[in-house]
Image 1 (spheres, rainbow, N blue to C red):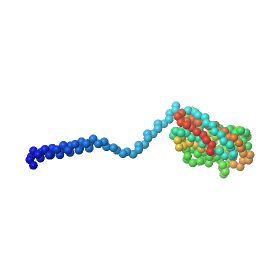
Image 2 (image 1 turned 90 degrees about the vertical axis):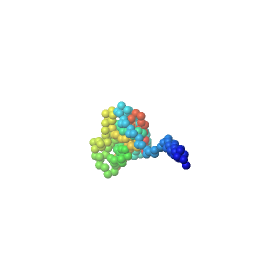
Image 3 (image 1 turned 135 degrees about the vertical axis):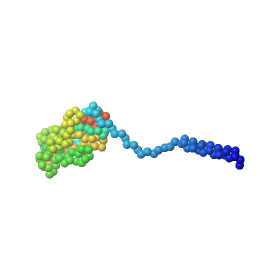
Image 4 (image 1 turned 180 degrees about the horizontal axis):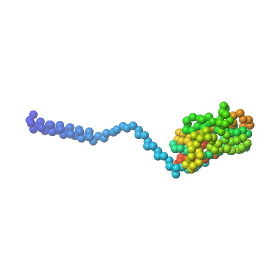
Amino acid sequence: MTTSRRLRMSRIRFAAVAVVLLSLASIPLGFVLGQALPPPSPPKLLSQYGVVRLYASTTFNGRAQITITSREAAPFFLTALTLFLSQPAGASIVLNTINIDNTGPIQVSGSGTTPSSQVVIVTAGLTYGDVVQSMPSYLSFLIMKDPLGNNAIVANGGNGGMVIGVGTMSGSSGAYSGPLITIATVVAPSDTIVTMTFT
């Protein structure tokens, strides 16, 4: 093979290698990344909170459980939870348990509790009473100021919330049985949905 032919062949090989390298450089490379965490939601400003009033009713036969939840994962505040009876209570209705953000129920009143630790919501002979206003000092760790400056029970929305159990005072006779209407006043983010149900 002549020198000129060898030079021509090496040029062809070099050009082929250059074409292969250029074609490799033009192939887009894809990267597989793990799913990025969503950015944290900015905290809600006080100006983004509003007041909502909720209604629910059930037939009371000595025990009831009230559940209040908010769709958005931001704090909401229960400033009032008033129970209304259709006739005067024959025995006091007390706060039995309270569960904030699924941390487990706190036993407040019930069998084995002393009268001084019982939280009376509706006093015997009356037709209404308010849970939040009845809170004693030893449960003050549940109370905070809401964005409007009122005392309130605070819970987180999303998977949190609050479950409040009420019932006739242990050992009482002549318990009330009949319609129970509950009205809750809640301060929550203005773009959320707040619900209250009896279970």
